[in-house]
Length: 505
Image (cartoon, rainbow, N blue to C red; front, side):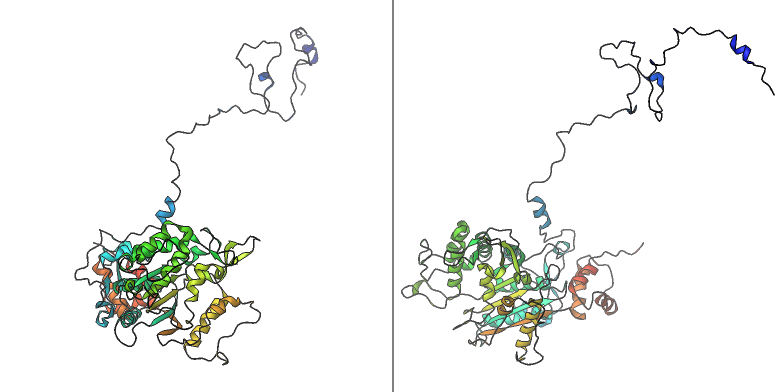
């Protein structure tokens, strides 16, 4: 069909004057893919007023509103000071006022620590002793002390054995003044650190002198200053700050005992130490002057292990008490430390005089016991923070075999894998021959396992009496929880007992 609008009609239309139409060169042309309308483009013939933008948005410019950035407010929260987070992470809370007070709860004393009738009961730690235990850092942040009214510890079989051992060392029998050396091992949450705490509490009860290394890792992680011991021994390194901290812990925890003992020997390395000075003032001298802390520690150790005074100083001598030494996390001392020599070579942990001293105590003394006045060495391993060291694992097996009477040349004696590249220094540190002194015992390995069902029942009854457990504690229920806890692992029992169970109304 032909349109009625013909070409002749188009020719009759009035033509627009050429001056009205813009010239092709005056019309701006943008890229073919651009979608902005041409009419928004600014006309170059128009003048712009001061401070006024004519036309639409520029090329590739958005038309959305722009939000101005807010200036920082002065009241913005600031990060906590240096050390506050670490202090909060390591904070120890020993009392929960919301927990019920257990009526008739007995305390740990010289009588109760050896009473087998109390096996499985929880004994409260004496209140005056808490400051001493805090000073030696016996408490750990994740041990659950904050869920009870007052701190207490369960009297298990290993605790009773240790209590009788301490009682014999301080007694008047044939075992008086003996030295016991043990390495405490066991599975995770089996109570190794708490076992050390129980040993410290018993030592304070018996008026012993307590030396502690709460975290062995802190001495090899390059967090404290160090330097060569002397020009004669440039390959040995001393840690003055760590030694001063050890003296501070020992001074605060054993202040009553050290204030009654006097210096009875001559110490040429310390000109300021005079005969007749109390051992308390001697320890203070090392705390106040860290540069001489190692010399002060050596003098203090020589005074506490002395059996007689130097000639002419007999009037200043009094019998020394037994000594307890505890170390937690022993495996960290069996490898290279994070410290470096001047040639940037790693320093072995055994080249640190602090570590070397405490490891040398495990070997038997030459002429007399390493602890002539008696005492105990309790070094514990850690399974929650424990490096895997093959030489140390084999060394512990060899120690257990020697204590059991297995000859090193026997085929059943633990041997090293020839392709394992063992550390000979670690193996030599635990080669313990038969002591020449009758008062010194051989090094042995004690493995702590789970508690018995009767001990587990007494432990769970303590939770119920504290208001944390609302269950009927009977043999069937205790047997179920004992099985769920991996055969009575004390840490798992605590985790099960602290769960509140409230019956529905």
